[in-house]
Image (cartoon, rainbow, N blue to C red):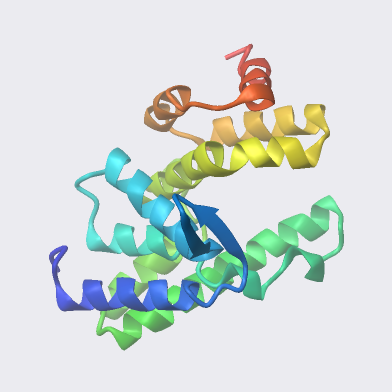
Length: 199
């Protein structure tokens, strides 16, 4: 299927429609946005920068990375490391199944659906180029669009440094080069410099 295929256009439209229902809002460039819709647009934009030759399936995976995430809030799980990991693992399957249902509705075959589900479940990182690309894109979106606020809100500098280092470890060399070109602000810049001092 080509980029302009009807199933692809339908899938993106339905993913955006689902994410538009997010009750959480964010102001961006003078407009009031559903947070997960804005996140999905940022994922697509970074995918275009990293992989302008990306397949339709990879574009669908990027767009669906956080589909309907607000439906499974972090508060449902214990405020522990184990609780956090259970939440993240649950989200991976939730997003994969949401994307799969939309793709089936749009006429995608079972193999295509399985591929997108595998990517969204984070299977094959460092081995599957498509799964690694989506991980790279997610890391770059976090660093560019959410990290400054995360630093201001979180407060524990040592913990943030550890998070940056773990994020860096998950990224490919191409994504790391892209990250080094990001324009961060204030404390975020200093923390990233400290986190990467040994790299």
